[in-house]
Length: 75
Image (cartoon, rainbow, N blue to C red):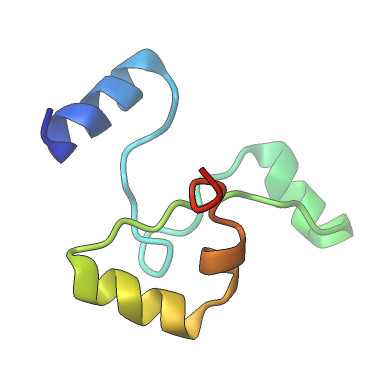
């Protein structure tokens, strides 16, 4: 299975939405989460899609949570 097939399967199954740019499109939220930003601090999970291994390495060098939150490293 190639990546686009895997992504399509996840979207069709309702596991995730399509990839969007948080910079230009904003973070996909509910109205409740939008309201919670004013009153609190909602946690919205983000999955970064890498163009290639060099981008993955660069992100992991610059963003430590991308390393220590990786639940698949321990497997």
